[in-house]
Image (tube, rainbow, N blue to C red; front, top):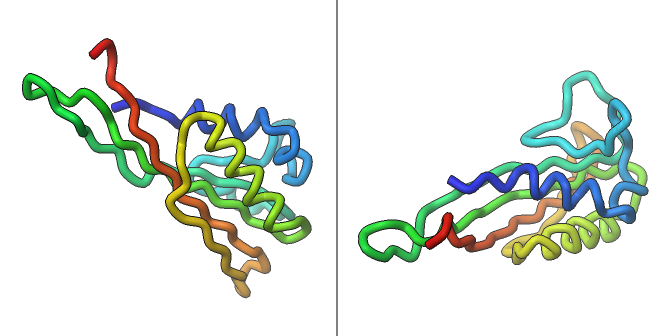
Length: 128
């Protein structure tokens, strides 16, 4: 299985426009795999998580590529949801993902507007 988590984190962290509108956590941008740390009161932060990773495009009964599907979410209290969504898009597109979904919803229980984006890419395995 091809692990894209470190590549996605790097793309998000290296986007200065995104980092400028999210909080910091322990000296790093507030970008977290799966969920944010408990007992934190961020104004704006980002999470990312793997949705699916499947083998595709077979040759000689072996998978040649993997189809990888991620969700990247921005949680916004004090910034433009458009800016966060666009900068997430810029980051993910820069590493070869294409967007399959974007939506936003206000979460009355947390006070965040949640910008949810879903992404897919197909990557060749090994030296095949």
